Image (cartoon, rainbow, N blue to C red; front, side, top):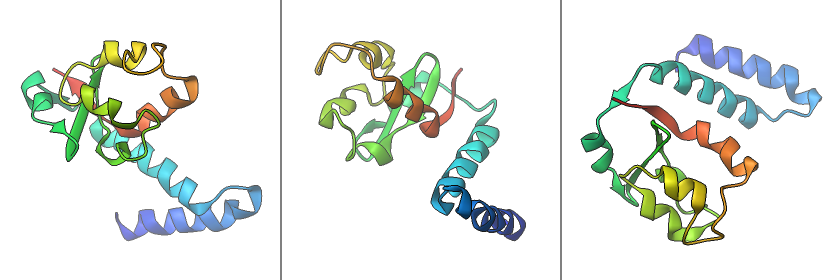
Length: 122
């Protein structure tokens, strides 16, 4: 991250700290925006996705979008069920959760998904 971007984040965190925002939240939100901008028009083949099928590197393909969920495996509310979707088109698994409740993920869980977006399928 450039020093200019870092200073902007730092200034924003001090400015907004009195408004109930935490600097970590600001940094995370900024990083998510940067990730979306940096990954715009990035595409991967299904073969590339399939190479990320372990707990050490887990990519999910959901509705044509690719998500690197490796960092959230240990904190996944459904435990190891997430590992079933690593390296494959996990759209159906994501919306039906056959190893869990059998229902779609909650809207709260769905709101986290963009944080892991890395690109689209080609």
